[in-house]
Length: 325
Image 1: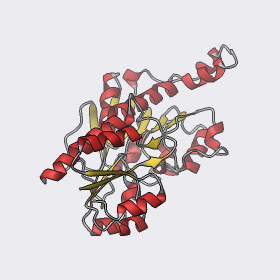
Image 2 (image 1 turned 120 degrees about the horizontal axis):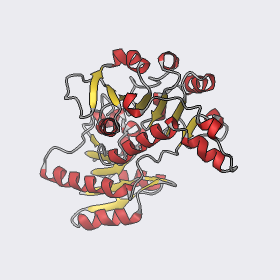
Image 3 (image 1 turned 120 degrees about the vertical axis):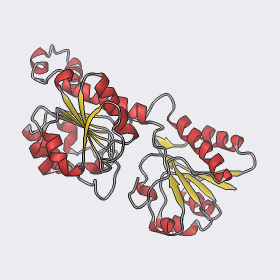
Image 4 (image 1 turned 135 degrees about the horizontal axis):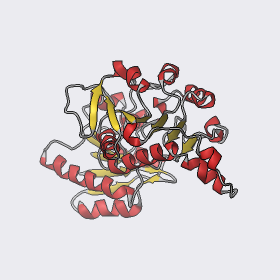
């Protein structure tokens, strides 16, 4: 079986050569190849049975006639949803659950930092300013009297809910499948049709939904209009879930108290983007998933799935390509 590793998006999202060697050592009877350039990808994809990749172009998909399965190196698979692959029955799996603990911790950290104005303290520290007046402006209820709304109750959202409940917050979840079991820590679950009611009750909102046609710009002017002035918005999912112009307007006008953002419509965030200058925004550069070693868990899951694939067993984390997750 020919396996092509094609995860090379410098400077961060690149599968280390040591991990490619690890895959090859674990699969001595297979041919494991590393595609690092556009030319490598087009040439090697033609004979690939399996890909470990983050993205594929329509031209690459058309050339990969032998391809049977793609293991995404990420949770989001928007860059792999090429119609030609679905029509040929190519299976796509993702790494759902591999980094959920780290991402959930990051989301909670952003909630707490914004509520307690820690970003203000850090900025004032650089000028040795005793910022008591600025810090006391954060008039928020204690966690035990606060409601967190988690939009998306997959692996990440469910973990966010459990952590928040452990801190004493009351949690409302928003998701499409209302017949599924309620995750631990979630007080109630509502559907997308009740999103505005949920937002109106929220002291903090965490976005943990996938990027799909339905979720594009799901937080826009109407949603910001119903949120509380002291509420904070956290995005550890995908940048396209938020209408950027509406968010900037809401932050400038004080419609919401602040935003903690780890994902953006354009990455890196352009130098001239207004989010950089807003004092009520805490930006992290798409690093929520980072921990001791981002790639160990990815490769662990891939190797487990290779074994399942070879034995004809169901693969872990198969993506519904029609839904996009």
